[in-house]
Length: 474
Image (cartoon, rainbow, N blue to C red; front, side, top):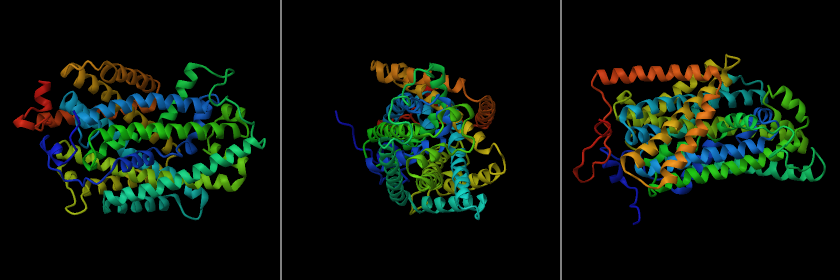
């Protein structure tokens, strides 16, 4: 039987009013996911992945894509079951129990609230390196203001800007790939070989999996598509399909560009031994292919992609998470306010901008600002993904007796085990701060329960049903 169109009544059956504008097509969702992941994301962290993988950077990205595909499949299942904004907060809350959903939303907030500030900081530092006369703080303020204006204008404007930015990134990537291949054919670099994918001299399982934990940062963002479930005009399954498609396309681009760059690295042994403290390894490889102008182009593209395009969609996704939690009375109600004509959660959008600005300015004064934010973003996202996989099994197999073993048991289990390995081997400081954040969330949940604000999430109000996630949990 065909699935019904995803229209306003789908949200209303869960006890909500359709407030956000349903105007996004499958293409819009796909573009959003690609922009969030940034097709040229490896430009900025190439050196770290190269060192961590012993030069097998393409292999690290290939394994990372497969690993994250299990998570995308779990998102696809839960987005069909509960086609609403809120991502893991919604899926765990309705798939397992409302308090679990709150804690999952709290953990992924660590990712979503911090990532715009991280992106603004990286881009501002990069732009300052290109135009030293403009200080980092001024670049940061400019990026925040510009993105806030675009997001405040409405989802339709954001979608249009996304398409323009994606085209720009793909043009720069195409220039690098074509020139890189020509350069290798002309004898620059070390010529074509398969060592970026497999090098018997350096290969080990632990080495590659360690590098995957770094490469995973480039894939974070495909999950942001789930935040747009109430702004999609397509069927519910379009959310999952667009996530899988975005992950496959981005992963393929990551493998291709890092393979070429790895063959152009001027001194691979030194890069592996000493690392890439300045973050210029990719740009150095580009310079080998065509000279300083290509290094400058790739550096500029990275700054704009992270500070404008990526931060734009990150800010949007964060505001939708805050909106979803606020309308369920799990965050202050003013964050659930939607602009009457623009159809955007205006207060949540402005709050994200303010937090990003303050956080970015503060972290710009710390030498470890980027590293600290990066590890916290990774820990928050991957921890929430673990709960996502559990929610698939609980909702489909335990609660509803599904016998679709691969989709609802084997794939989530595989995704859980892979991510658990990454989380367990994460930076100790990130683990410590991540668990502190979880502890704060647990205290906040206890306060909500003690003051009578127990999460009440309607599972399905169709045909007069009023069952809630809290009732099912009981």
